[in-house]
Amino acid sequence: MKQLRGAGVALITPFKEDGSVDVEALKKVVAFNIEGNIDYLVVLGTTAESVTLSKAEKELVMRTVEEVNAGTLPLVIGIGGNNTAALVEELRSADLSAYDAILSVSPYYNRPTQEGIYQHFAALSQASPLPIILYNVPGRTGSNMLPETVVRLAKKFDNIVAVKEACGNMVQVQELISTRPQGFLVLSGDDITALPTIVAGGDGVISVIGQVLPKEFSKMVHEGLRGNSKKAYGYHYKMQDGMKLIFEEGNPAGIKVIFEYLGLANANVRLPLITASDALKHRIVSFMESMIRIPA
Image 1 (cartoon, rainbow, N blue to C red):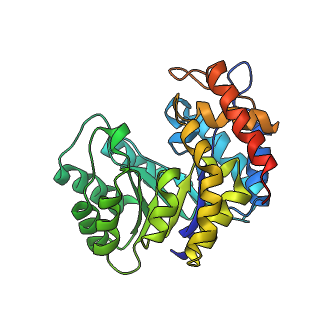
Image 2: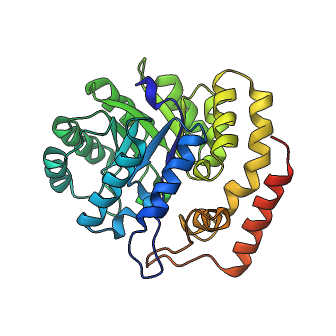
């Protein structure tokens, strides 16, 4: 799946003041990323606040992104959760004709064993019409999908083609890279570890901050993949403070502050998330102002 190498971004879902999906803002966000040289778009990931969207709203988001993208970039759709049977049914019934792959998070809250995680993704693999990207994010799910489980799945199922790894542990990332089967992609799930993962032999990232700094972020990723680590780290260090700031009060509260600063969407989020504090907004805006002052 070469089209999944590079800089992917997990798109937000913009909301109007009344809490409804802001379709026009979403169109602007998608166009901004296409113009910014991002490699592919992830729709309805966790950054999209997908767990708070109704089925009708999810359809609206999907069709809006499809319309604006118009086949320009590969599209990945987030279909994950902790009810295996429900996900199997969704994979069998959904119209995924516009998408190139599925991103599916390891089951959260249930905290399954490694065998439970394996059997969950085995069931999804057998039902999926598209290649699957596994998503490991222990800080949110409550369980860590270990490298041996990922490798076992990758070797057994041809349509399990990549992992988005957000464990935050570079030793685990390096173990994954060194033991994966040929052609299986290791993608960073944390902005701060994106470049270290690439330098270690990984294949890219599914990013949050990349969608507001698409030109700078894609340059960092592409230079890293070309082996120009010194130049790539130049971009990394410019964006490093922002990578930390946007997660201080939860995702996507922080990244939406930047979208508001850019005039593309407002900062509204849905409960149980709340908008970023004034103090954090000030620091994020200061970061963005500093980015403008730094030559590309």
